[in-house]
Length: 56
Image 1 (tube, rainbow, N blue to C red):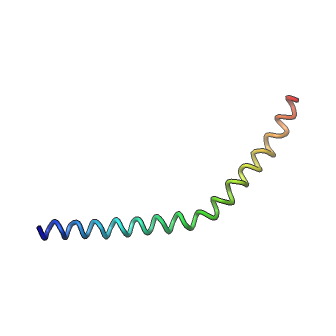
Image 2 (image 1 turned 60 degrees about the vertical axis):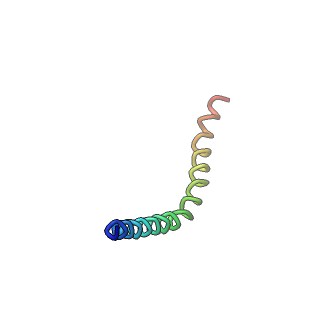
Image 3 (image 1 turned 180 degrees about the horizontal axis):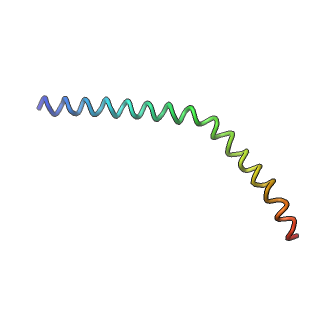
């Protein structure tokens, strides 16, 4: 039973480390993503406006 507990502890530590690393990565990218989304929307509208004007 001790061997199973040891393996479980090793896997739990690896999982906790991976979850922490992933959370740190997402937290670092979140401000950039929040700024990039509106910028992409504005650029899309500016690019489509002349094309839509051709049909009106």
